[in-house]
Image (tube, rainbow, N blue to C red):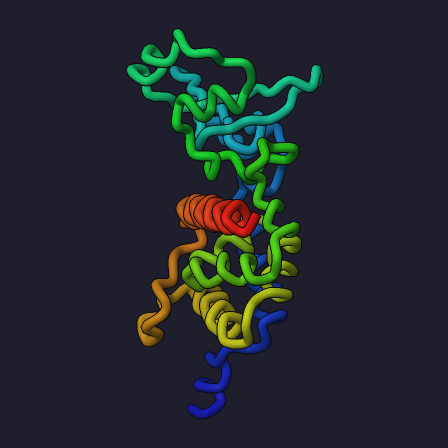
Length: 229
């Protein structure tokens, strides 16, 4: 009985992370390749064009699937991709002066948080936090719930985990370790008042939350710097 209970206690942060990251890779076939065939059976084929654009095909259908707004640089160095826009807002802004991508994104009120994860993305790439003062980096982690931060780290990978470990308090590390532990068990952490453990498949909403918090802290920091100047 004691040995069974001991087996269910969290191990070190590093061990829980390694287990969860391995599970992440196994459970999410769409994340295992950059492009190409994700799944092929006798009835369907799912192919991946890029991070957020897929095509599913069968005997009587062929459908493009877009999991979110997606921008990337093409071979000519131009921004390309897919954006969901409000058609009314699009019409309203057609007469405005649009000189570049930033102008268009601003006019359409497209959340930069939807775009921040792409390589060579617009200025709101999540890595902007690397150049922030430590105080603001700490503020970002304080804004994130442990369960969301756990999924964000799994989705982004080692680089984000290293950032978290460098900035987080010991208490924050323990809370995220516990989230990893419960994810690895496949259970919710109902005993922890700070936790609402999500399924590993809930990473999309966690990434959006992360992007929104980055933008929130960025705005606060800029106002502070402006006021200080």
